Length: 139
Image (tube, rainbow, N blue to C red):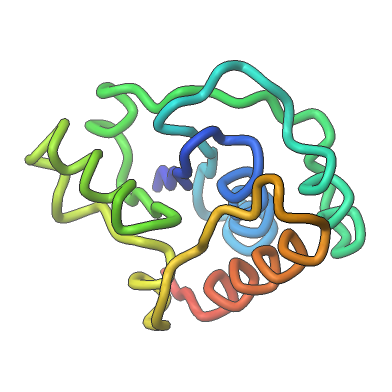
């Protein structure tokens, strides 16, 4: 099974989700993360710090842009927001049955809002919400 976590820049939310999904499902699934508008940057310093506090290492992460081929070959695509889901489903309509927001797939309300530029406590809240969602997922 191939799972892709998707956010905007692939520097904050989706790398955090990738690390948590790999920790939980890495023995039964191939997990990666991508961005809708990635530029090849590393994970944000705040994301690295917060993940380190939680026991994950994303310090080597380099952002990558989601491709049409990846959308087509993925088994499950988990986006951080409804807007990310809409962008993917508009670009590749036949993928609609395998694209969900992370919260939707986990059966919890809300979305994973972007903490970029909002300070370390917002990153912590974001990471905790991602963890709550990942913990609720069963494959």
